[in-house]
Amino acid sequence: MQFVRLVFPLRERKNPNDMFNGTLFALCITFDKPKPENAVTIAVSSRVLFRTEREQKVFEQKGVEEYLRYQIEHENEPFAPGPAFPFVKALETVNTRLRELYPQSEQLFDIVLVTYNHAHVGIRLINTINHHNLFIERFCMTGGSSPIGYLKAWHTNLYLSADAEKVREALAEGIAAATMFMPEKLTEVSESQLRVAFDGDAVLFSDESERIFKAHGLDKFFEHERENEDTLLDHGPLKGFLEALGKLQKKFYAKGQRLDCPIRTYLVTARSAASSGIRALKTLRAWGLEIDEALFLAGAPKGPMLEKIRPHIYFDDQMFHVEGAAEMGTIAAHVPYGVAQKCNTNQKTNMGK
Ligand SMILES: [Mg+2]
Image (cartoon, rainbow, N blue to C red; front, side):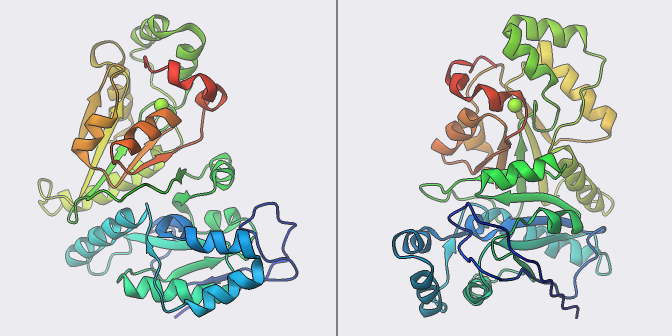
C-alpha cells in the first residue's frame, strides 16, 4: 500500500468554497492502484459526484465553524448522488468487465476524488463512497488550493468539476475537462454500458471551423468545409479522452466482444452529413479513432437525439446545447473552450449550426 502526504502553503482564497484560511495542507492519499501512465485517470470533484447544496448553504449562511460542525455531526449521513455519479458507476462497470478479461492488466479507469475541503470532511466522503459501493481509493483534499498540479502528476485523462474557473485552468494546461451542473433530477441510464457522447467542433476538433461560422455565417462555413474536405481538422480538448476510450474498447474487441462492448461512443454534431460531416469523419478516420454512432443534425436541436441515446455524459462547448440537452434530461457537461465562449450573449441566435 502506498500512502502519500503532501504539504503545501495555501494561497489567498477568492472562492467561497475555499473556506479554510490559515496554514492548512493538501492531503493526497493513494492506495495500491494502477500506475497513472497505464490507467485512464478520471478526476471528479466531490461537488459533482455528490449533492452538497445543503452543506454549501450552511457554509454561506453560518460560516466555516458551523459548516465544519455540521459536517462532523452528519458524517454518518451519506451524500446523495450528483450529476457525475452515474458516469463514475458506469466506469466501474467497465472495470469489472476488464478485470474479468485481463486480470493482470493496469489498463483500467482510475477514479480520483478531488475536493477543496478540509480533511475533516473526508470522513463523510469516505462514508458516502462506502455507502454507495464506489471503488474510489484516490483522494485529493486540496484544502482550497488548485488541483491542477496534481491532475498533471496523475496524467489525468478527464477532469469533471462544478468550478468553471478550475475547468478553464485545466483546459489551458492541455487537460480534457468539463463543467457539470446540478440537474433537477437524475435520468435513468444504462447500468451495463458506458455511453459517452461528444459534440464535434471545439470538443473533439479544434474551433477552426467554428470561427468561420461565427465570422461569416452558415453558407460560408459549408463552403469552407467542402473546400477543405481533405484537410484534417486539428484536435480539440476532448480528443485524447475519446482516444483513451477507444483503447479500452479495443481490449474488448480483441476478445471477440465488439457487439457486447460495455463502452459506446457517439458524435452528436450540428454539422450536416452532406456538406460538412465528411471532413469530420475523414479526420476521425485519419486519427485512427472509431466512433460507434455519428449523428449529423444539420442545425436541428440536439436534445431529442440525446434523449434517445441517454448518455452518461454529453460534452458540448456551447452552453445553449448543454442547457437544451439538460432540459430534456440528458447529463450534459460544458467544455469552456474556443471561440463560442466569446459569443455567449449571441448563442441563442446562433442555433443554425
Ligand atoms: Mg461545438
